[in-house]
Image (cartoon, rainbow, N blue to C red; front, side, top):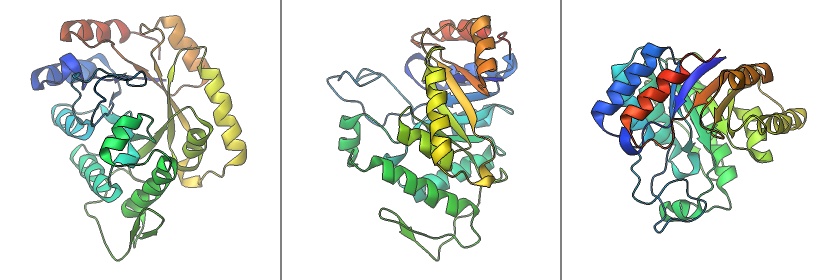
Length: 281
């Protein structure tokens, strides 16, 4: 099991000096990946579903990861997650391929269908069709990255007779990590993801794994994707014990992410990373 870090493009860690210091610290401590999330806008006033307050700072994940790529050498660079229906898939495919080239193949593209209605409405994306958009966008981006003659003819995306170079340098394209806990998200992970991204506590994970197993029983999985990997972030509680980590490994987690909430102090975040670097993995 590998250890990764999540969520350090927010609040006290948004500045350039903090980003450099913490990313380099994580790499020196042996963490294998650096994941960050996304919210383009936040509802004001805050609504119960919103994970952040309206004035909480959050840097765009791809801009942030490009900065991190330039100051690290080994950390894999993950989005956890990009709200895919809010993005133009061709533009995003170009951005992700560019980051993959500049980072020498270190991109892990985590995506989800989204859930925060005020954000999606402000961007102009209907909540009702976000799942189908997510599936189409993934398929369209995959065609741009991998097909000899890229094309796609869907309800929301149509293109042909175009090319988008440079293509990703990672064989098979950036690894797709599908987030979500719904039956639809589990099916999407099985059909389109190299990995599934979830969060919660130890008691939640077996329930999610059962959902993935049910999806696998009814959903065809392309051979090129290989085995579905499990990426899991503990947020309940925030502190991960050695026993927790051992149990996650036994349950089949491939990559355990730690999240130094509430990210109010760079010093506290650094201490959290140092404490958790010794977890068994």
